[in-house]
Length: 230
View (cartoon, rainbow, N blue to C red):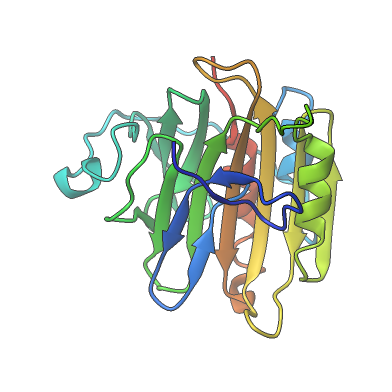
């Protein structure tokens, strides 16, 4: 299995898919339990949200998008108050799922792999990466821990706007840097895969700073839905 360098890892650990998009090189890095999902979904300046269940309907993926990944599922689609249309991506090998805004994000056409999926924003400035990897065992017997991934993410360089951490998950929201002024929201969960007892799964959403306030509801919805599946 091919890997790419994980965010800020000090041991050169290769963990999640690497996607090269126009203008930028974007690295995917990113459990929600019933108790942790609500707190992970809150964002730094948002007011408490009241979730509403919306009717769902089965839809079929467009042929071009279906080719992006064999694991892409559009089993659910719904209209929600923030105006975005959400669909479900479910990764069976690594046992996780997420709802993402399909009107804003489309599968990256050149992406190949079973670990996750990369999506391009229609504005060409917004990106989303999903990935998973079995935490690597080093020669000295060390196994990468959630705490290490958390510290590495916090040390990426951007100003930390929000951080939350649970037993098997964490969220970090960061402002941009001089080299890349876009904001970044990262959620990491640990859980199992189809064949492994411990796997790291990550969701990274990068977007223009000017859209920070407008995207809070959407980020909360996606973060809420990003969790381990059975």
